[in-house]
Length: 246
Image (cartoon, rainbow, N blue to C red; front, side, top):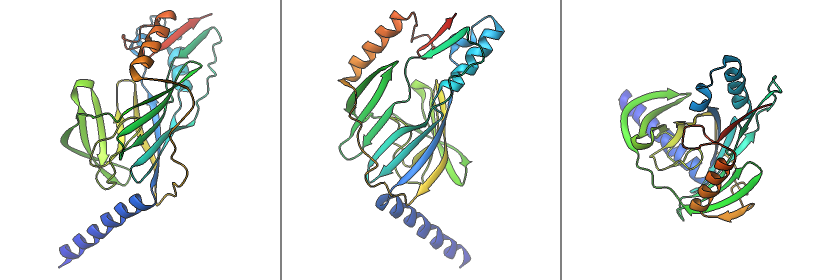
């Protein structure tokens, strides 16, 4: 009898969570931890290497918000990191990042507002069809039990929770049977820090509309051309980072 009662309570809790998310929406605050690119780890001078590593960590936007409601979501940067370095003779530039991403599960469209240094671009494309492989591993993130999923070809690991049954996550990532609470990709690790259920998302989810409209292919071509002009090879694990020694 006790087991039946516990099962009923669990079913009620899950049903309530689904209803709250569906009707009112939710807000998730993520923290992004940038990984040090391979080109930085190969710097011989330990002082310069340590300075550049510190600059990269300070440059990045470390907090993002995902607001989701009724199949739509908006992922935006919350907080910009400091660019102060302590060594004015070494400057580090990161050529992209901090994208604003709108996703619509009903229309299967995604709109991204992305930067290449000081130029802003707007990209509309189909929602990515990600080839997730569901694994048997589990762990806990905060109060939530999460399960592991991978995209082996791209060395991507996600941890998602079916207790939060929305197919969404940070940036362009979605397509799992639960919210992604942790994401590990080559350039960074993204982890959920705060989750607000029953969040009033009315008027807070709108596709970005600022920037030059280009296709994803055009954006990649412009970015690669800019990298080459600045002497940066984006295909060598540098993540679009340029190091300037004064």
